Image 1 (spheres, rainbow over the protein chains, first blue to last red):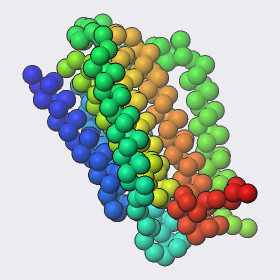
Image 2 (image 1 turned 60 degrees about the vertical axis):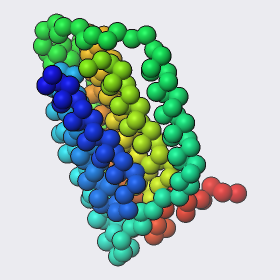
Image 3 (image 1 turned 135 degrees about the vertical axis):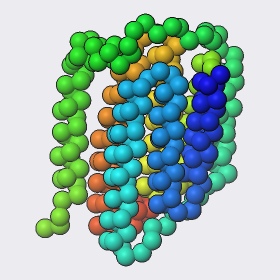
Length: 163
Length: 99
């Protein structure tokens, strides 16, 4: 009962905030709505018993990504000295593409033969994730460290001061 | 809740993100739409992982979140670079490759 109420609450917040992200007129407000959408997604993860993923979602996504985007907006607005324009175009085409895809996806999901019941948890999920991260997925895990380093170097190279 | 509710929610969020990506003029706005789409995919991954009782999907979600962080940092660095050279963040103005 509590789980169903939590799911619908987070789902409504997520869809509402997502709508505000894509149709809002103010870029800064869009970023803040995105932060709310990401936190609501963390709530959805909690209803799926994935506490660790929810924590990572809040820390990295809602904390890190949103902060970086806000910084970028502030810096670019200082560079030009005016508000960034944040308008939309091709609304009809966008509505057609995304609405069409939504209809196709919903029809496919409604027809799919999937199990409805959640299996019982076999032990601590966070412990399982940690174990498979350092055994089965050890190589991708290390490669991820290299990727983050390369991303850091690339970002600081692109954004270096003009010489 | 059945898995179908999660899949439907993810489909709606994905289509919202797609709409934002297609219609926004500003490059940062397009990036926000892409974030929403990635988020929807993560919901699907975690839902399938939980309902199948296998933790692979959750590990994949962790990787996806980390790679998204790197992608956003690089994307915004490119936006700042474009701003320096073109004084504009509008995607339509980035047409250097046009013949």
